[in-house]
Structures are given as C-alpha cells and as structure tokens.
Image (cartoon, rainbow, N blue to C red; front, side):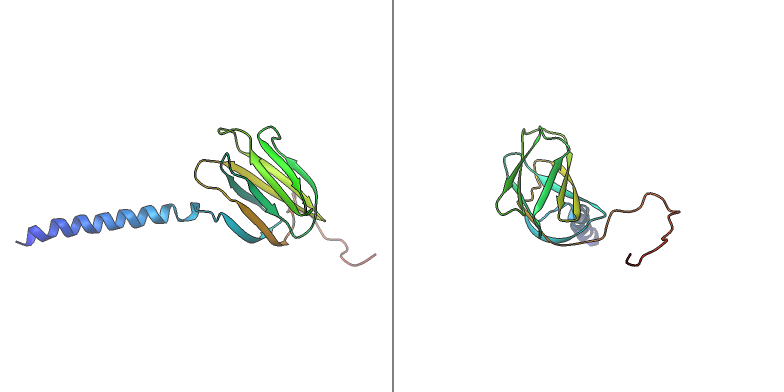
Length: 147
C-alpha cells in the first residue's frame, strides 16, 4: 500500500522541481517591452529587437549623433523631439550589432540583439551616471581642482 503512494508523489515532486528549475533558468531572460531606466555610462546595454517591430529610445537630452555598427541591417530614424530615436531591423536574419548614441556630454553604448522572442518597444532613459573606465590601472590623478 505504501508503494502505491510513493511513486505518484515522487513524480509530482520531480515535476515541480523541474518546472521551478526551468523558470529560474529563464528568469533573467525576460525583458520589459516598455521600460524606463537609469543607465550606467560605463557599461554596454543590451537592446533586444524582433524584425518587423519598431523600437524607440528616448533620452533626457537631445541626441547629437548616432553611430550604428552596421547601418545596412539597422535602420535609424531621427524623430521630433530631438531626444527621440526610432530603430528597425532590416531583414529577419541579421547579425547582432552595436549602436552608439551621443547626447549632450554623454555617450551611450548598446548591443542590438536581433531575435524572434524578446523585443523592447520603448526604452526611456530617465537618468545617467558613471563614465567610461580608464584603460590603465597605473594612472595617477595629478590635479582635480579648477584651473
């Protein structure tokens, strides 16, 4: 009698463990289609796009320059107001590329990741902090005051 209950309960516990394991494995891969975030200027940010869908990036300041890694596969449209940028993938099977946006004295770097499941419709940058890191660890600060 005992063995009749052990097998179904064991299968149920094993199924629950597998489901929870799969959910935790994919927990970090979900992106918000509409998001506002504060970005670190010293990091590269991922931007997920699906062919056939537009993505809009909104910055706090006007955009002074946009430099795509591959201008053939990433269509860029400057829009009004001057702090808005529209992006579209040209082609269903395109390689990943990068995108550099200059805004005021800030430089934002994105890795554009084409895929079929995750897409970001709107990314609004509400704040920025940090800066690009120094290449050498032996740099010394000589003077930090006003001249």
